[in-house]
Length: 112
Image (cartoon, rainbow, N blue to C red):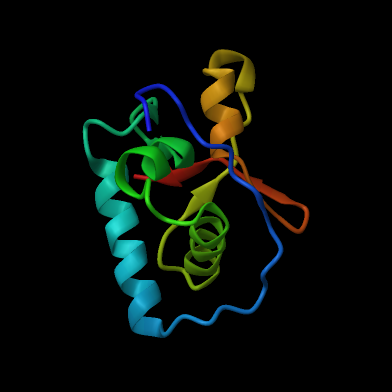
């Protein structure tokens, strides 16, 4: 994927995950490491854009599965997801590429 090009996330419709606790823990650990990397786009250094994490570190992963695993890891308390509230002060393309929707919740960031 070309730098600056981010695949748009999809709505998460899967509510039951088929992953073992070990798989989900390993995934969450890899996401936290990717979120902390200097190359990953961040907002104020405190939160990493999900779209950047996906594009830079998980580009070969299926987008729907990646988003579903993020939500499952968040629900399990393995990582923390946040919503972008000050969208006007951010790169709109990055915010759109980072959006993960689960039920009525929207997430754009992984807390670093």
